[in-house]
Amino acid sequence: MSLDDITKNIQQKMAMAAGLQAKVKFDFGDDGLVFVDTTQNPPLISHDDGDADTVLACSIDTFQKLMNGTQDPNIAFMTGKLKIKGNMGLAMKLNSILED
Image (cartoon, rainbow, N blue to C red; front, side, top):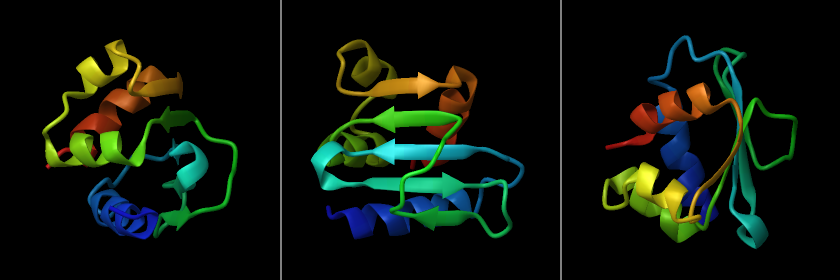
């Protein structure tokens, strides 16, 4: 899965996340990042870096598994495959939004 595919998938999921009102960064290291600002309507989604309320950092492969339900986000976090910086409550909300 490419960064563009992930961006499209995130865009579809965030369209259903009315009322989130947050800035989130999905950091894929050398593969790039996706920045989502849901404080705007429609949500701004870009590959530009910005200050975020929560940063989720993982590989694209791990993120794909999180989105298709084959990787438990809690296990990924506990094993270090997923790193979270910032608002943990927001990260938990994102989990329910991003899951299939």
